[in-house]
Length: 294
Image (cartoon, rainbow, N blue to C red; front, side):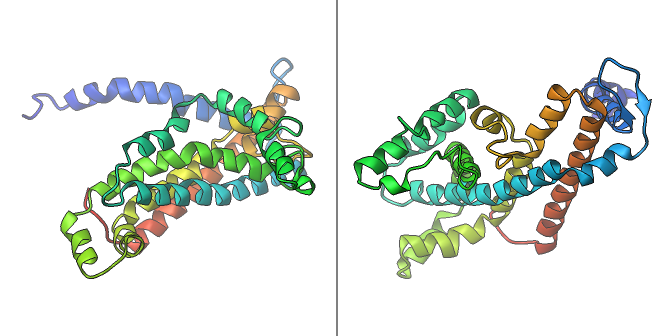
């Protein structure tokens, strides 16, 4: 059924466009304008051109935050996507009842991030933590340490928590994709003598490659949005070892009240995220790939 008036489609999409403009476009434009100014929120707004952007590339802590963010992305690709893929393989193995495990692995995703951060804070505690307690009970006192207070382990410790949370999320994505694989293909591989592991890595994984690529894109872009876990567990410490872009941005804006510089940092981050996303999408489209049709 075609609309009787040419402007009818525009009228129908107008509410969505207005909401998008109000929530995204207008704030983004205002942030971009503010990034060229010096303003604390209470004094006179003064335009300073590209000074804030030049300052950002000289800011050692800001550059460190990018290094930490990309290191965190690398760790989460392993601890979230790769582990989630392996879990999906385990819960789709033939001849086993895995309903309980599917629910158990997905439960951490449903918990509030604040609760998880506090919970794992106790796990990593130097005095009463489960990790150090277990090491001491096993006579491995020399391996105990302040996991969140040691610059060499703090980022890894938070990444493990992130993996514990989101591995179940990616498992659910991969589980749904694996369920779409035609049964006769798997049965043919088994009849040819392939083991469960061989079927998974040589048959199932290649067939869900498009979904794996989507999961990688979600993981990478989601890592740039991380904040609450880092803020509650370490707040960027110790010695900026877990300082990521978002925690430093919040510190600049709400602690130092430098809104112009904070807007510039947000603008740079937006550009970086868009570029990274476009590169990943370009690589995915260039590879083409085969997989299950969805």
